[in-house]
Image (cartoon, rainbow, N blue to C red; front, side, top):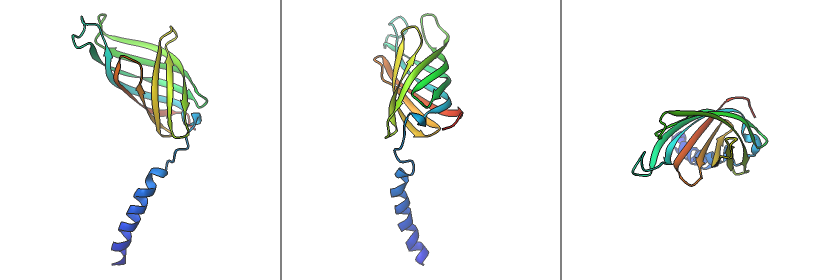
Length: 151
């Protein structure tokens, strides 16, 4: 009988404490290693491609984060509806900043003057999510999971 009264008390305690288990103690060191990422969304296109002015895309790739604020190397494959059709493959480098509350920003540099900007949230040492904040990037969300290296 005592057990049936204690379980609800501990349940409430653990639910209240659970958000603090991975308390906001992040830094640039939180992103360290090779991450596989994938994303999808909508991007602006010309009217000859879509009268709505946007088309869906999907993207996947690998990126190496050094734990010090740099994306040292990355590859991607991007697929959407374009006037040229098909997929695009490429590489990029970049920078990132992770705040102590586990939020942050990242910038990807394609090396030709093209930059992409993101807000990010670190969920755990091996998982984070990004959303593109550039004009014309409509609902572009990416999930990343570490597949190599460690913190």
